[in-house]
Image (cartoon, rainbow, N blue to C red; front, side):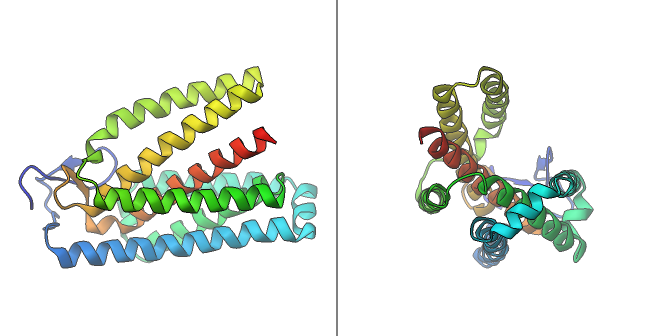
Length: 243
């Protein structure tokens, strides 16, 4: 393992003294891990795009969900339960096929909720948000792979920014002002863009101070997926608020 590098084994557990430590400096292990993560991520994004397209272009689906609002709450409960289980329970996200089952349930629930949200916007607005998100995500991923700056040390700062964003979001809900909504959404898109670079470099390992264990391919894919979804939602909010 590169000198000074620490491996990330899960939420709140940094260190080199873990029994299950991997030699993450070996290029073959790192490449295989990255390929697996991006293969899972692509499947998640394809499923999500399928749900969004279904809600946008099939009016019957949107009407059925509006007439049965309990479906929204069921999906939300499934999403929260799966997210907490994968984030807090190491065995859940490391043990196959349980980890894939939980990730699949989470992705389906998240995709359904995104479909419900996007159905409130015009097709042009959603397609524009998808295009911008794709361009931003690709650019940030390439930047994360190429830059010499180490973003893996920004974990504490990103948590602080997220707390500020949460308080800002509550304020934006109370005040209900278009300009405030745009500022809030722009700040959210920026913070989750930083999260995308941070999570990408955690996955890369190499010369970065912190890295994520190769066993955590489900957790790595989940983090990247949530980063991209949040960037998409904040960009969609900006587009919706400006129209």
